[in-house]
Picture (tube, helix red, strand yellow):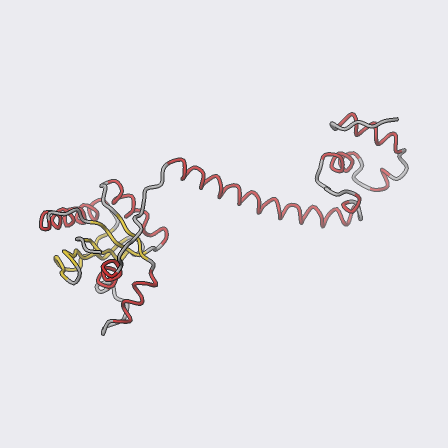
Length: 214
């Protein structure tokens, strides 16, 4: 790929970046900014200078580093700057090809830029719409509740095996309305063993949606 870029090495709360007119042609030195209003303002000013120099739109390239990149992603999206995220393993391979192959904040933007320029095609980072974000949050909540439910079921089964052994073996689904209604009424086998089947059936008919024939 050939276009002017700003190559960014993202850390927790700050970043080092360098501008490139094209592959191996730098535009200025490596600079460090904090992820705050002042820092992003400086980054935007350098991007605008590079655009004025090349008369082309500048895109941003950085490694995927999870939550550390979120403030930067929001800033770039707000300012309509095209963004590409690369795999950290790719830039690590580029560093190994260099003479000075140790990871340093000042050299990492160079390795990141080489990954971009060596690729024929890259996937642009697209802003996710509100529906996607809402569904993702709901899915996380669902997974969390599901994990809690599994733990509660294990605890329930362990306790039930003590106070009512063999109970869950009587039913195909021990958590459906019939077994749970019986258990609520007769929480111990001694309360159930002397009851007539007809008595239990009438209770179930009254307290569930099921009916029985005499």
